[in-house]
Image 1 (cartoon, one colour):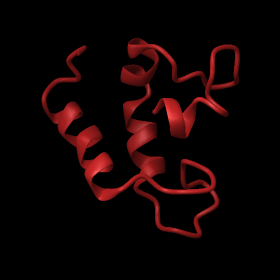
Image 2 (cartoon, rainbow, N blue to C red):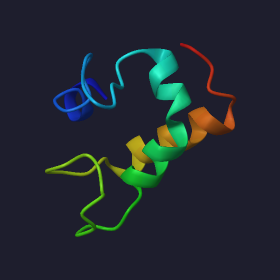
Image 3 (tube, rainbow, N blue to C red):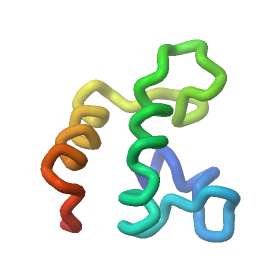
Length: 69
């Protein structure tokens, strides 16, 4: 997330995704945006995509209860 999201979602931004709680509380929106098809203007991150492995890490983290590591 640091490399792909913090350029736009840093502290003080409209939708910061810096802390565990910020990411945890926004997991539904994050999963929605990172799984959108290429070409969708709402797909995140802008200018690239997470790999299938990275996306599956988010999905598994949610399925496992969003534990803080």
